[in-house]
Length: 510
Ligand SMILES: Nc1ncnc2c1ncn2[C@@H]1O[C@H](COP(=O)(O)OP(=O)(O)OP(=O)(O)O)[C@@H](O)[C@H]1O
Ligand SMILES: [Mg+2]
Image 1 (cartoon, rainbow, N blue to C red):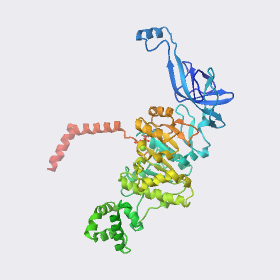
Image 2: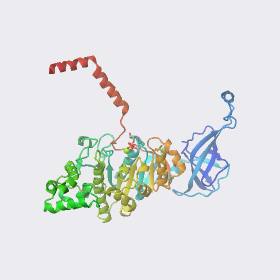
Image 3: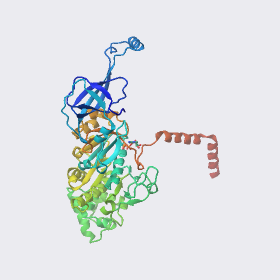
């Protein structure tokens, strides 16, 4: 990228207050998405190059190959390079305000230098999270923490870098002493205690896992894992009904559970519950038997201790809820327990610090038109959480399959590569910050490149998200080296010596 104040080109005709065109000479090194400026009456007008078109009158589409070859071999070239640029605004201190200046043909256009770019893409350290830099240079891009007050959505197709981006934001929030809760269905964040070399990164990160999560990693890989358990005695009859998926309008089943509780006479552990249920009149027992079997199947979650809010919420503390391998119904139940207790302590001001809740695979927790407990809770936090200091970061590769209200409550978006038109439409509909010209860029983003829009930035920007400082959990599978390993294994298996040895062993056994 060229820095400094040399004149890059000149405006030509057809300009308006939100876009302009300028010509550049052939030898200028400039790319789409770079920033330029004009000085109009001592106002600095910033523009972003959306497209560079190279055209020629002479070498047009009626020419055949030989004619073009003749022109080029005789150095005849009338091509012009025209940059199409949007106007982002007028620099006013460190901010951009709307520009209403007239852009006349023949005005000089300059490359925006680092000094100007830093002004528009950075905030004071105290109020910002450093998440990357402009794709073509080292100008840092930071997020305004205050912008997170109105929730954030991280959207992209699979493999584009959503979890990586979320982890970078978590790292930055940890540095600022934030309280963070992560609902992690694929164990993507369970290594965040460690840095990329496997050494300790932060003592403030804890992983919670229910005895039913299969976990993609062993406890040895992760280090200390806290069990997320429930003491059956601590559950109210309504809690038990919830776990058994008995909805309010299932009058018969509700009455049967109430009856069991009446007959338990103060005894309350799971065995008491199941034993009392067995003594129910046969027709009642038959009705509830399937749900009792379910309770027995998940009995491992009922232990001597109920994991509570003080275990996972604290100033500067990040708690990763590893829900990997869990049935979605149970993942919903645990997530609901966590989010509703956070909601309660924030509502009552018992916990005064802001809480950032990251929800991975958010479309599974709050799909459109679903009204179960977890989706109601997420919608409630999306709607009113900011008043109490609960801020959501919803992460999904299915923007069309998540509740539209939740998505539209997210006033900021980080959007990485998206090629599917229906997902692009869902994104476009979810936010007024996203313009058509930004949408056009979505399919051409590289892995780790993101468009940032909304209150987290002063203006929309494409950024290369920085490297992670912490160890990733769910990195892509390295197919090539695994296939090589498989070939080696196959070779070994087909090796005559190996076959002879195997046969010998077999004969020995016989
Ligand atoms: N900014 C980046 N810099 C370097 N590598 C990155 C960056 N972003 C993503 N990657 C790499 O790309 C791969 C996919 O990233 P990631 O797992 O974050 O994608 P995802 O969008 O969360 O995918 P999925 O939908 O499967 O969860 C990972 O191996 C990750 O390390
Ligand atoms: Mg991911």
